Amino acid sequence: MPEKTLFQRIADREIPSDMLYEDELCIVIRDINPKAPTHFLVIPRDPISTLDDLTEEDGPLVGHLLLVAKKVAAEEGLSGGYRAVFNCGPDAFQTVPHIHLHVLGGRKLGWPPG
Ligand code: AMP
Image (cartoon, protein in one colour):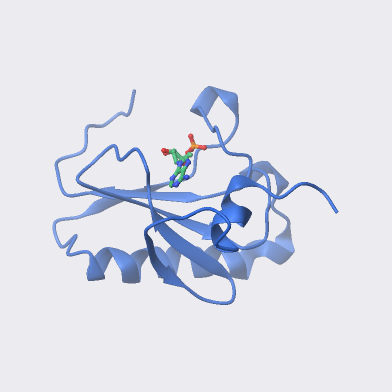
């Protein structure tokens, strides 16, 4: 068995987190180092490393992650809008090699990002 990723260990409750939602396909946790007043991560249980590793078969899973992001954003009161972003690879500063959708809101977000 390959070593578990950080986010698998969080999903398996080996590492504590502030978990907002979970289902059979994904978990949602608050980011430990938030970049906005509200910042949570939507993480598939399947430890796909980066967006570049997705296949056609993952299409429904990615759609599910976006729908969960929308649902939790509403529950978190992000009625003024929010940003949902996957960092992919070193140029985007992806630090955890297990895909995760960042959802940020609660303030005006600059564009373009740095
Ligand atoms: P990225 O840089 O796109 O790979 O994002 C990884 C994110 O995971 C960062 O925003 C980190 O703050 C966050 N993170 C790292 N460790 C934890 C943890 N134990 N619990 C919650 N979020 C974490």
